[in-house]
Image (tube, rainbow, N blue to C red; front, side):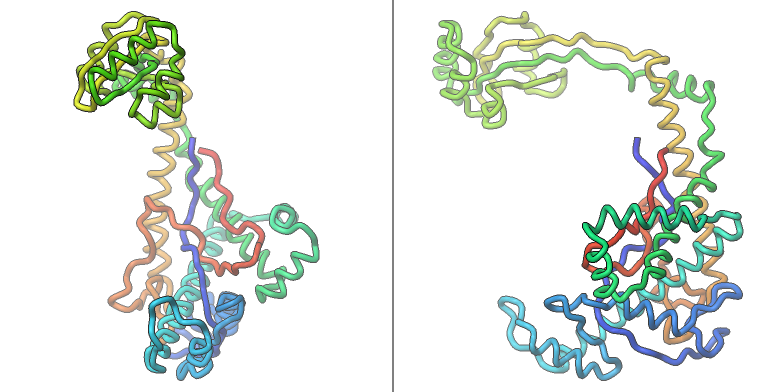
Length: 395
């Protein structure tokens, strides 16, 4: 079965450099860019994560400094970079516009990361969901072993990414909290009774039936004469592989020595299907004229129709129902979660994003649809790094 997880936030790939701004407006106090409930997201936090997100993401691994509002350094860096193939020299105004677009994207994504990280943290506290320090450290060490061949490589990564180990631990903790929140939210949805299973089987019994299937050896030719020649070769004892290689125009089965496995009714041209299901096993039959050409075939194996019993299907049905109920519960929770926390989130005028109660009118979407199950919105440097996507519990 697949897995489901509480994925509230979006993946993030960022470019540019960190800048300081003065927060203003709304109910957000000076020195902060947003408030979630009574908790402030400070200018210092924003500047730090903006710097991390933009570290080493530019041309040749060098950050392109997004020096708002004039973008002088950014424009200069873009002018030095090789122009894309087929693109002429761009004006300073056009390059400045690119820099501003990149900066606005980075700024918004960092804000979304910080806001949604606070949402996860507050929900975990509300539900008494926590990650023990020892567990967190073990997860980090396990991920370090997977991502880095040596401790030196890990330290190099920290240096080039601009992150400290505390920053890495923060990201790992968010993912662990999401996993635990998923488990907490969907715990009751795991319960599936025998009556539930039996009811599903009774209503969907046909889904557990397998029709008769036949494994074939085939040769497809353009003309009846070629088909007769192929059949004559087979009747004289030539191997199927040899005959298929010489006569068949069906490249897919030709590569398999003429084998066409598990054919059921309703899958092939009707003329071929009628002949195949009327044939005896082990007899060379044909030619059969179809819209694709002329077939010569042999039934190599017959698998009779079967019906999976309730007991045979029980585990499959139980897992299916559990998965459906968990997903439905999780979708409903995420919808309420977003609405509740967005209503508690105020942002400074220059930092408004979709997650803010005072979001811009043209930016009201707080993320992908629930069915898409977005991933954590965390700055992702290009260098190898510990796994930061939340582990997903079994359904």
